[in-house]
Image (tube, rainbow, N blue to C red):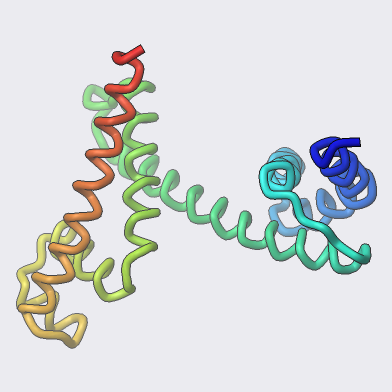
Length: 180
């Protein structure tokens, strides 16, 4: 039996022993069977990609619960971003409603920016949002965060660099199919 076969068998055993429990735990957390099923599935897919060995069933459950908890946080964050976008759309006159494709593109971009901002230090992310989205001056942002105006400019520049990297990555993804 190859290592791959052994790993697949281990995942199958983990799935059989813990999937129902994990689904129940997620269902209680999320209050929705469909979302719980999706996240439980995603948890086991992650184990397929990065296999783990557990000596005991409680050890496996601790790991699965920890991983699933992080997945719930990501899920709620994504839902929060999506709801904010839907709320903004609802405030627009119907004639300005973007197409479904455009809405999906905007949501993808919002999720990418959200992920980039989460990687920044809290003050840098806050400075960027206050300066760009809220259109506050450097001095206003500095006062709100308790830092200097120079530091605000550094924070915003760091976040802008992150945005430029996201844009470059998107351009590379867009160009990749053209190369085939």
